[in-house]
Length: 408
Image (cartoon, rainbow, N blue to C red):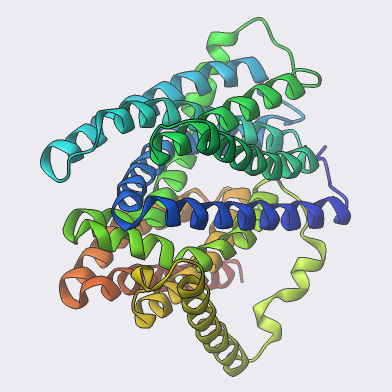
């Protein structure tokens, strides 16, 4: 029997995710100002590489466990998931180490201390991500929401303390704060879940094999989404000046903040929760012209507020073209719509659509972003990715219509 959450808890989860993301945004802007454009660009490269490796080695595992942890017929025990999580975190860390060393050798020299810090950060970051997903798997949305907020507060606390009491570099202080917060989060999740998780001391090897085997299809969903989320920064970091990567990352951060809405809704959908009042927002209740007007209004507001806030808070050194911010806003709107679409397909277990759309998203985003960069420079990257999201949404609509006509 599926565990249904109250409307209050679902609403609290979305609001808390928004609060945590907002605190993370303010924290990122603060340390960006201290680091400066060039150092912030190096940190962005490390974060981007980490997220790519994280999605490659962990995404499908988290999705599979969330869908099977409370299965009434064949639930997956927590301990085998922990074994797989540790192995996945190790692979993530080694992947990050290899890619950063290659980037440092061929493109831009990364200090050794940052390479070592990124190795430790990526290991505990992967454990934190998977342990957080285990809370979602057991329906502990309230705990997960509170933990999201507390992690950011712990990061800020340690960052301020280390900044006052030590003489080490700001980048090292940042990574130390992140590592300590992820360690706290992982330990808290493990101790919390141990109290109610399914225990199974027998057949753990078979359970591990089942997790790895069952996550293959969902792995492609996670990899494609993760790569699409950071392919713009990857392409800019490889083919444009490093300083532009820092200003692009910070300049679009205010719009990225709104990702918490489709991300939270997507997690609720995959957890098989009825969205209740969210369903009242279905686009079919609005005329197309109203949707277009609302979208244009949101883009204009995003550009104006983003530029005004960044110039006031960080200064004109961080200013980027308004057209680039507008293109990124279009990309984010289409990304949110696609995330809701693919989450519903995961729940309905539509394997063909999941596989095809994931491949299109993964390769289409890289190709679209690269072609856009070569044709239109910085603005072309988000435009190319946005076009790919638009095509995927259209593909979903066509596939649904074909399915309905076949049934009739």
